[in-house]
Length: 263
Picture (cartoon, helix red, strand yellow):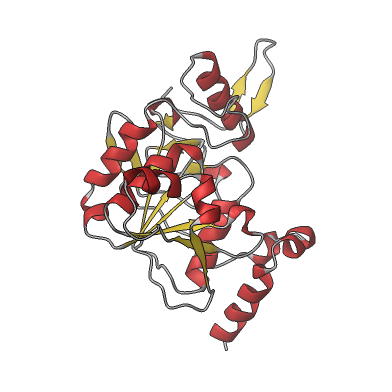
């Protein structure tokens, strides 16, 4: 699918259609479904799609020098990155996974049982494992995250990223910056199918709060985005709705923390 997506396109009736993040998501999801390029869970609509070849892409992550030299890695909880989580644990690194929908906190550290085998590590890498074999990380902990691995619906060769539309990856990144767990130099990697990579995406779709990626890994290749795009420095509170603020209690704690830092 690698192609240039412009800000508008003509449909069959000759009318001009404005290209949006949602129209790009629909394009990717539909392509994956029509070409049978996805695995369970399906259909892929409204998900970070579990693309065929996800394990091959995960293996390429483990080949990165950025992976080999790091100790603490944050990985999203979606199905296509499950094998990445297993490889982090297998390499005896610290695996951090976001709390689902951030309802009870920001990050959990996966703690496999002592002396467990590979089969148990695989269980710990699943959504079940995140629930049963993890401990929460306090927002004021001094933990430092060396590498971030995230899922995507679409990415451009320059690093612009489109998620499934709920904004959690962007929010998680901003929260980690606020608590001092990461900085501008922390590398962000995404694993996707080759068809999810676009030559370019409309720059006007992306704002300061959108998280770009530094490295794109597909089942076939490793793409380093140069120059690296600037990343969010903190939470943009103007984008947080009253409903979201109430749904995610840790936002209140983060806001207090940010105010203390600005004193």
